[in-house]
Length: 226
Image 1 (cartoon, rainbow, N blue to C red):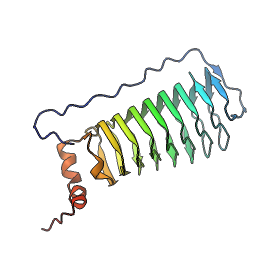
Image 2 (image 1 turned 90 degrees about the vertical axis):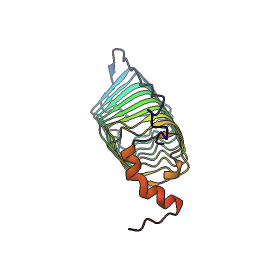
Image 3 (image 1 turned 30 degrees about the vertical axis):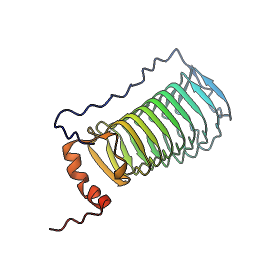
Image 4 (image 1 turned 180 degrees about the horizontal axis):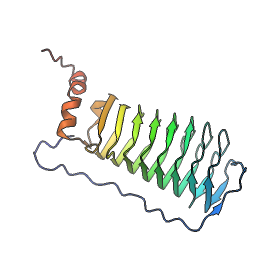
């Protein structure tokens, strides 16, 4: 929340991933993902993975570029020390997945299911994600950098050292969220549809406090009459 002392608010910064990929082997063109598959040191470039089944798969030291993920099943997948650039898809299922030391750049996604997931040292840079479902997920050292997030659902999630520099956040659901060292000050736009009372543990700027005043008043049952 805003610092009432008038001094600079203290908040621990997120640790960003440092992904250094080894020499990669191109993934077999026309191949298909497999449940519980093991993908190590591969480059996925321009592949259409729509509707494929990769639940429980492990991706380690991989580069994924300009691939399609419409309806792709990746429940409980593990994505580790990897980069994803220019990916696109609607209805991708990453529920209960683990992302650790991952960079996601210029994604265009809609209705992504990441509920129950674990994200640690992850950066989302640029791009737009509509209706991102992060209910009951655990986010630690996660940065949303210059993204557009439309109606993200953080219901019941735990956020620790999460930042939103340059982001446009519209209609976020924070119901039941637990926050520790969450820095919202850099967000270009911050819209909260539900759960404004769960901002304890977050830091916001004075202009954001002004913008959120109607939501705070509504939460407290205060009527503002001119």
